[in-house]
Amino acid sequence: MPSAGPARRAELEAFAQARLRAVRLRSHVHSAWDVPRWRDVGADFFVLQLLTPLLGQRPVAPWAFVDLFSDEVERFMRAGVTYIEVHEHPTRPERGAGVVWRDGAEFAQWFYAVAYRLRSRFGPEIKVGFPALDEATPSEPLSEPAISWRTRFLEQVSGVLEAADWVALHVYWRTWEVMRALDGALRF
Image (cartoon, rainbow, N blue to C red; front, top):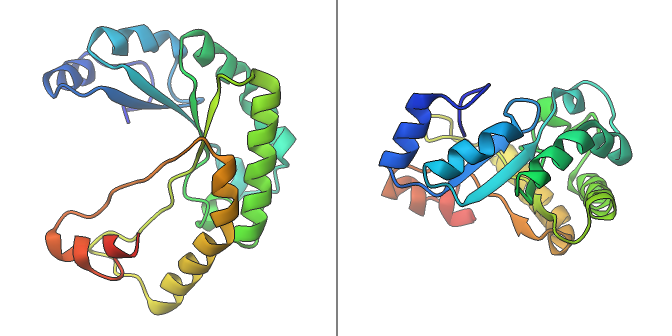
């Protein structure tokens, strides 16, 4: 993901040199006006992430969440961005766990309602993405209770994955050992 604000020349050059094709932009951080600049350096796949710290502070109903981002989603869609990631890291308290939803089942209901409202408002061309979940990095091994809670969360949201057009995934694993570890990539 690019740094906050307008696309910087150094970022665009690095993107082009690396021959990358996908870029994730964050609503209320990046501008739809930059989409053509990213295309000019080779981007042909865009994801707009809808993320707000409000979910960690107070309950936000699905309709209010969609209303918060509607104008910006419309601007990005006019620029050709149709892949929308709804939120990020829903297992973290600062991202809504324990504030807007108590568990995966409540998050699944919230996500389903958001996805329904986005499609109702923006039509079938919008592609709603289930958010990436957080994961401990190799320097932060997960405890057994955390693994159990996350496993339970994944089980509880599994039914709503059918309502998503795609699923986001963050890859934090940097070594073969961590890739093969039960509390690392192997679990996924």
